[in-house]
Length: 473
Image (cartoon, rainbow, N blue to C red; front, side):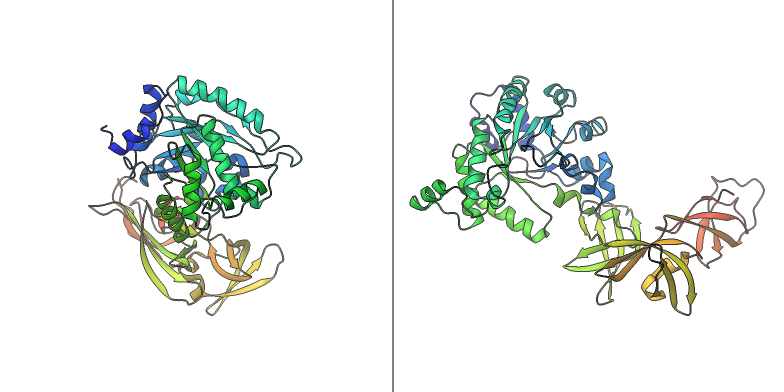
């Protein structure tokens, strides 16, 4: 790995660090699509500790620990940061494929609000070494009554990490003796970043600062000396200046879920202000990747709401796999076809979903009953789309609504149907022989193994409309 001049320059700022720590810093700065530029984008998945499983319900694939490794690798990110359990669950499969940062302290929202904001030590430097991590991550809460204890904890842990050749990343978030607006005030963010630098952090993570000034003395000084805080670029520049005049790596969190265009605006301001990059969690993994789009999913595409009515996974001879998706606009009723590749992130819209029982068809109308209120609704066959092929008396489906208006239905993953037509079974044919066409009771054609004959009940995948297995009686 040949270092760029930019990376060599940044490493020269860390004058007291040993070759092991500098090697890990270089490993971080040279990895991914931004490798060698002095910029970085890190995927943090520490919100599960803080907020619980609700963090991942927008994208069920994100419950799988390998998903986050794959997301960071396929996107060409700098590193993946997570608590102990996440990293342990993929350490062997993804060893050496992306630099990792072990988050070694965590908190939770069930912690009583009467307590001072604090975090528990949930992993060790030894864990980071065992898992092959490049750095440890630690959160401090400047302003909290527990902040002094947190400073002492990271001082000891940072010394141990550096002695072992690991880099140190400090998340610095103001809590406690500041207002809600003050948590992102420019003077408070700059103060917290400066504290992280003083505590020995190699990489400092803070929130994007607002133009609000929290501290009265800071306000007087900023106004007197003409510190510019009007634009995000100005504020980024001041935070970077507060970290030893730009001699420490400073990255900024993506914050609450937002439009991609807003994230890009933030990124431009960070680059223009001299920041070193972004650390984006929820704005990454709460979106689903292109290959995960399923029939019935409602997504935001080009600023509008669409429902996926057909999907087809394609693996071309050349190039990467993609999902061909037919989308229906939920307000205009128009349709379009889009190709989503696995590395693309798609904004899934979480709607109000309720279980409904399918009752009967009346012409082109389909009647369902709410399982909680027992109220009936009528949906047109055109609205339900191809999903109508699988509806059976008494079947439970999920009807998704937005502001009380039904938008889509979600079928069970599988259904059982009877074959009405199929070529005769030939003696000696086995399940491993080539498949043959068959017609189901709903008129749908499907490919089945040659040993499956007419009258057989089989399990069908409602997503890709394929044979799964012979139904168990």
